[in-house]
Image 1 (cartoon, chains in turn orange, purple):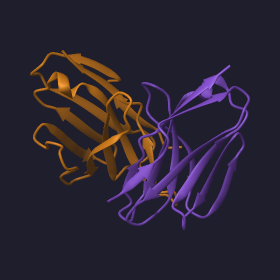
Image 2 (image 1 turned 180 degrees about the horizontal axis):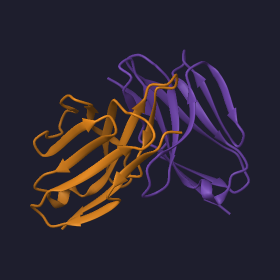
Image 3 (image 1 turned 90 degrees about the vertical axis):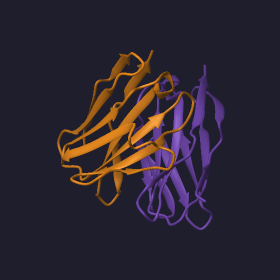
Length: 116
Length: 109
């Protein structure tokens, strides 16, 4: 299957700082990538849909000025959490959409963000 | 609205069989996925159903009935490593994945 990487796998930062998370499709081109957030013992929550070369589409309740998404190339999307606060501590997972007959999403390994 | 229901938690015994049910109401249907997620890790793909019937993948099988809006994941010969959350997800008419809350499966010796 298709491989998606995320970097970093975990990050600890101080409140008020910004953190950038990278999501890369390693062996295929992904025109669409998704960013999810998952709090403990909860399911994945879609934050935004990122299309290469265009602005991301954010889900209701997700602040686009706080969670900046850039899909600059067909293999890279970045999520920047600006002015992070402790409530932003979560597990962030990206996925890349592969338009096969299964319309499947392949997930990155996730990034654990802890804001102190 | 769009809704996917699955049990919150299930317990089973090592070596046994367990069935995890999922019912859905979505705007359109373009396939149903089952994912396994261990704590602290991203989901991993288990199965995909788009037509009615059973998809047999050895120890794991998945069933779909589109008319009933119903699917189940069947796990046989349970192993301790099968302890995880199992997520049901449906692709709607916009090809967006709608996620269930997940079923935490606890395997006891």
